[in-house]
Image 1 (cartoon, rainbow, N blue to C red):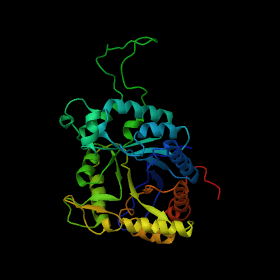
Image 2: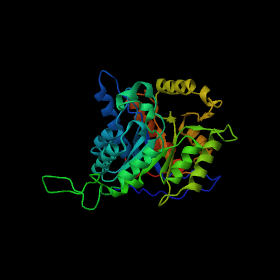
Image 3: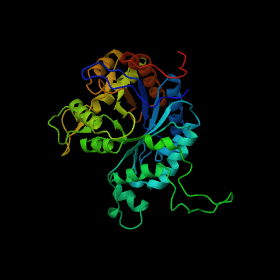
Length: 359
């Protein structure tokens, strides 16, 4: 079974959530002494999510820490362990990537997955640049262009136009070939997403025809509100107004959701302690950009559904992304996914896709 990449229309303002697509976002963590076990566990989560009927499974990409450092390599493996579920990157910092070489890797994964890849990207000077950029670039890395233009170059490469003039060829054992990005899957250029936390980023994504990823952090910079929901809603509405791409713009909203229904008493305490350790940061804007952070939703399914129904953003999007916390055990991740699929998402209008795990 294939999954449609065209979601239904957004719900009218003030209406209840109508979630038609549910995805998971995995941290992809492992330990230095046995990285295989952590990576294998994340691949099993992708398989588990597919069996539960999730429409998407996304992986974070991070450098210099024990998490997945190459989303395309990981998703190439995931493409061979799954059949239906969309496979996403959330997000690839384009600053460390060659727009052409990354396009080759992404195209390879998209072909292996039979067109299921969703490519989430971010621009700007990437994190830990003082440590890492000198290893990535020759010369003074501060002279490199880390702007949105790198993503535009990637998109252009993915369109697969032939390089050089009409008579340009490169040698090959099977005979001269016209040079182009290979393998080439034409639809991939239309499945690029931007991880936007600011109004400026949302506008850029709209004007360049990328889909939009919004998470549990956004910037209130330039907005007359300290409300996370109101700020993120402004980003989304402005994005839709300015969208200049083809087809329907997709918006996926990420939230940290941790149901306690089927967890034992010790695990429930762990979840509550996790929520409490992160609560203070949600009380006021952070820093010059007035970063606003949504609170984590930890509790029974009924409590979580009540909170999500009151979320103004979820009243206007149809795609919900479940952001899994860092440093939880594999069994805890499975419990969270199972409880969300069984008791939370159906109350928001969601229906599973494909073969669903037997209870």
